Image (cartoon, rainbow over all chains, first blue to last red):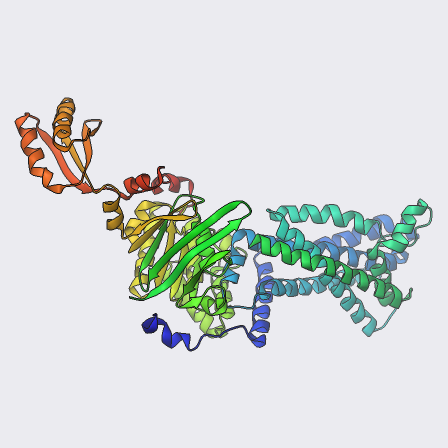
Amino acid sequence: MTAVVTAPRAATLDKRVSPVTTLKNVRTLAWRGLVQIKHNPMELIDLSIQPIMFVLLFAYVFGPSISGSVEAYLPVLIPGIIVQNALFASMSTGFGLNIDVTKGVFDRFRSLPIARTAPLAGRILADVVKQAWSMAILLLVGVIIGFRFGTGFFAVIGAFLLLLAFALMFAWVSVLVGLSVNEPEKVQVFGFTAIFPLTFLSKAFIPSTQGMPEWLGYFIDHINPVSFLITAERGLLVGDAAVLRPAVISMLWGLGIAAVFIPLCLRAFKRRV
Amino acid sequence: MTYAIQAEGLVKRFGETHALAGVSLAARTGTVLGVLGPNGAGKTTAVRVLATLLKPDAGHATVAGYDVVKDAHRVRQLIGLTGQYAGVDEMLTGTENLILIGRLLGMSRRDSRARAAELLERFDLWDARERAAKTYSGGMRRRLDLASSLVGRPEILYLDEPTTGLDPRARNGLWDIVRELTDDGVTVLLTTQYLEEADQLANEIVVIDHGKVIADGTPDELKNQAGGQVLEIRPVDDAAAAKAALVIADLTGTVPDVKEGLVSVAVTDAAIMPAVVRHLDDAGVLVGELSLRKASLDEVFFALTGHKAEPEITDTAKEGAGV
């Protein structure tokens, strides 16, 4: 019935998205996530200045009291603050997603002949790059004020990969929040109220749980997955702890989080759009 | 006659609400189909189904012959969508927004840049091309949004309330663009709550209320369908209006409305005109204005839905964003 207008073009239409196109779509949308920073200096501050500030404050204010000197505290602090920063930063995935959904950008993407997974995958990929950037900044500041790597090059690469892998899985929590609330600001509120206690009730800023109520020390040492991740990061960066067991436990936690939250995200996604 | 868009019996429920309760519509290739209805009538839901964003619970729809559910990917290669909320990335510049779409559509870097420049020029955004879209006015955002939906030269374009919140100048500019597009052979499905907009742009109109099509046809057909013509008489002297009303009531058999010296009545037979003039003359009523016109779409809308349409564009545009 539409012979005249559409027939010539119809012959060139693809039935579905090819894997190569999918990868290109993801790359383009990841590019978009990174170009956004250019026009939003606040995000660059979030990613750079804020972590630097935290390192300096903790190192110079708490370091001497906790470990006797700034230098002695840095092996505790740097891996801890890297993990804390990664968890906070993972909230930006949900934050950005929420903006896309509420502003109609997501509808535009979904009306395009692109891979269905590309908008989310592109965003997550961009966020992984941002995570790596923040971690590099934190390490750099640490080294400037006296942090020393106690391991080799490959261990440090391993520290990056472990952190990014965990952040990638943990980001699904923020995706769910981003899809469930109606304002981007609420994602931030959630991030703060959930992640702040989660990271402070871990080994992030303390060398040991000595002197704490027994139940609290038990939670920090044996339950909180953040502690395992921090221990593994310390092992990989400082070399003062066994890596394998805490790394495996933190990855299992990450997989568990992803296994629970990915289906919930898909359900929320279907309901939302 | 070919149809670019065809929908039959579309049903979509959100919990208890029937956003669409069996909507059928068809847009002829190369024309503008106006989907007219008040807020919450189901217009946006209909567009989302036709744009492959939502699966209907029942019924089916085809775009250029392709099923919007089974052949969604093919449909997406043919359509452009401009939503109710301008779907532009506010953190990106105008140029970047358009390049993003071009790249996603598989254009090379150079082609997407060239296409972006062409569209920025055409939509009067050239000077703002290097600014982040968050600094744009409402009218500029709408134009960028429309430009984004045209990057891939779609054959079928959905415009979901494209002028809501725009001031009259920005609105007129957008209307001109829509006319240009149809001149190029693009099929446009336009939703609007503004009768004037549908009257201006649409070749055919479907009126939707509570998820159902309650009328369809050309603007003229709709006007005829709901009350035919309106006879209006304004005597030179306001005081004579009552007298004129009596004369008209005698002639037509219906009691006319009298408001501020204007006597108006719906008539079905235009041949009544000479008799009206004669009788008014006999009664000694001096007539200042006398007209026989088609019922306005406002009157049609009221007759069809039992409630008034949304306020006129000029009222709402005041609160809306500038050009």
